[in-house]
Amino acid sequence: MKKEEIRYCRDILLKDPRFAGYQKDFLAAVLNKPFYTLAEAEAAVKDFWKE
Image (tube, rainbow, N blue to C red; front, side):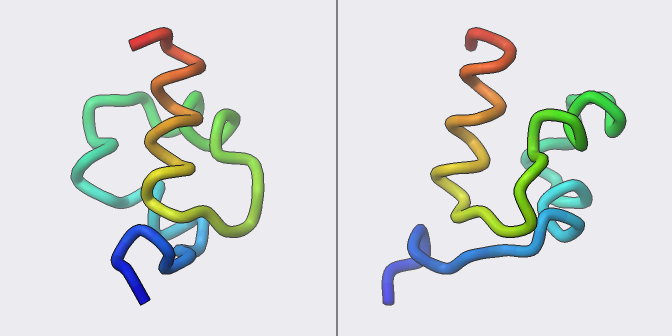
């Protein structure tokens, strides 16, 4: 299984250093599903903040 295919719990992603630059409340609102792959989480965050 590729690293990007591993699904991570939302709570783990909220604590992930790659998302440390975002305010936790907003990040929690964006990542509202229970599980994400890293690619899905990064895409959701970039789409929300239009990065």
